[in-house]
Image: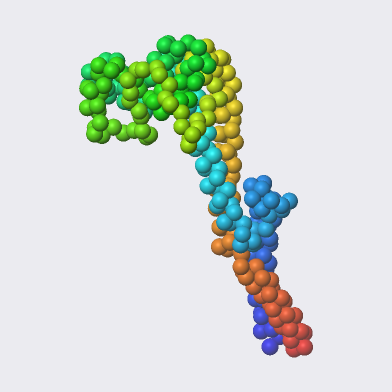
Length: 273
């Protein structure tokens, strides 16, 4: 009987060691997660609680927010790069893929006068204030496409064609009369006049390198936080699957039970000697 009791005690000790290893790994993982900067940021606390049911949903929202921010800064970068190319090519910024697509399609139809309205405006009205007033009277028109009045009928043949435009484009006669204002709407101006004034475009050109560097830095910062959030989400899910809930509590309770059994087995072994 002493031998059986000793064997029971040894089995209990081995099981205790396994459960203690599990608990130690869980506590180490919990501590590591609690100190992750991205989780502390999401939790808005000095340390995060990996067992909090609110942490994972908050992290998922942060991941989506960072993903959107990366996309938004990528669009901004693309816009700045397009402005640089447009200024070098046409003398003004404001290059639009949709506008260029319509101009190309119109010229393919034989509408030789088709051009981005902003480039026509920059040459027709060099005064920035006057050009700005015209644009603000109807931005959709004066930042769209212009054609000669004699070619408007031919230009209308483009209606109904399956152009892959991201946004509507206004095609209108190359006239420079301001649209009549309306009390039920207003237009907010762009940050500069570079889209329709060559002097303003040259000023912007000198600033573009710095603007590009800032935009790239912002995009990269959000990309890094998005990567950190995705990695933390994977780690948090792995922790939840293995350790959260009652797993660690059950393991601790099992350790106490096995210790009691081991103590009793050892006592029996000593009494049997």
